[in-house]
Length: 224
Image (tube, rainbow, N blue to C red; front, side, top):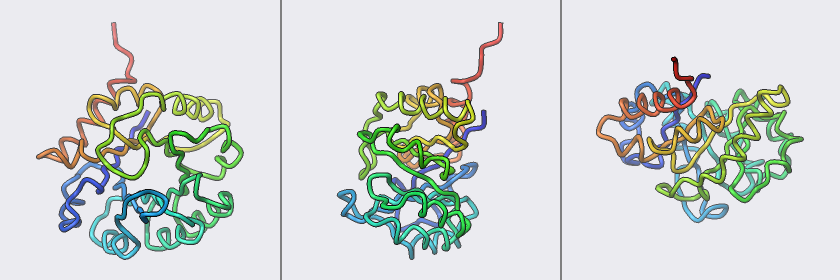
């Protein structure tokens, strides 16, 4: 199983974003939390910053839109060069059209579920998406504690991928760190968003590599 590590620049120094992006060598995606102070009680980055960041790094941008009316704004992030654009199930009005439009604009389409959102309610639209982001904290702020009870949602999504009912990346975001990533990997996640676990380290590239190693170790059968 191939794992993706996506450092979250929510935990980076916003005054030095180009340097902070360069510091996470070996990362697969760079996770960009876009918050509007409406859908979640925080205000972060917007489209102009994403456009500038795209010009400053070769790491694919993973834009997580925690905003109201994502149907209106998501396509702009795809057109700005984001590799993956994730909208929230709780905010999107027309999830299938939004997914189709994101793909037409050249991006992968992601759907995110808050902790209280039931996976079953979204099974019918997930075939139109490339990424399922299972929130393992309540969205809005970094540094929250990992919610292990969300692993059932991850396991169910992984089973549907394994049986061929879905074809998508199962991503987790919230509280991912060296002491939690193994549990998420064992449950079936294959993409891990990590903020302070990477940007709180003096050696960010090593932190990325170590998270990947811990995930791989968690699902590698022990030899006799």
